[in-house]
Length: 177
Image 1: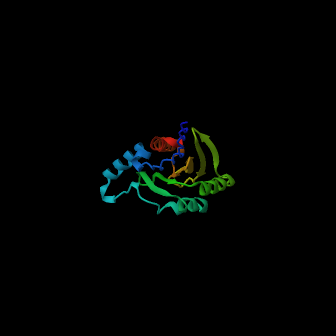
Image 2 (image 1 turned 90 degrees about the vertical axis):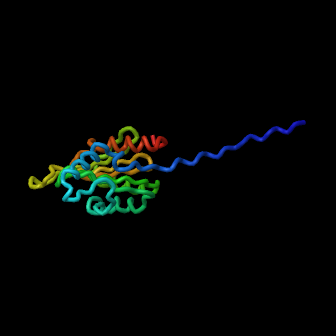
Image 3 (image 1 turned 30 degrees about the vertical axis):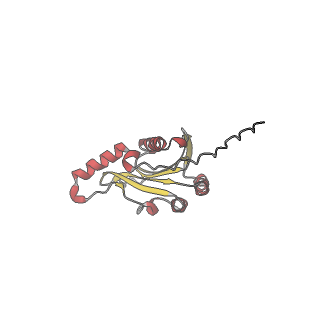
């Protein structure tokens, strides 16, 4: 009698590595505006695009700084729109444990308003500025899409840049959706 053929066992596929879209792909509109602004004033040497994390500690507190330190990969983008304004946006791959710690800290902070939309968890703090400031408000925004954390800081509300960034992240990482 013939022996039954063993069935092949298949290993579960490893998740695809996370891809962080570059600064231009995350926010094409703000990137183009920053490039145009920089080109109009070359003598100033305005930096835009991927500029790193030098400003991060000035813009975000200890929980965000700890999460950044635990990130697997990261990039820091800036999009200046004039001499006093712009958006700083940072994207990171954040493993489960530090992501949960960050979520707990954001939820415990009474300044942030939590919402979700299309698979994105959003935390926004709108901080009104004094009448003598260049900005009427500063927005600190945290958006989490799966293992990707996007955080932004600046005078523009999150709806001006976060939907584009999360769409670029989902396009680069179809398994997150």
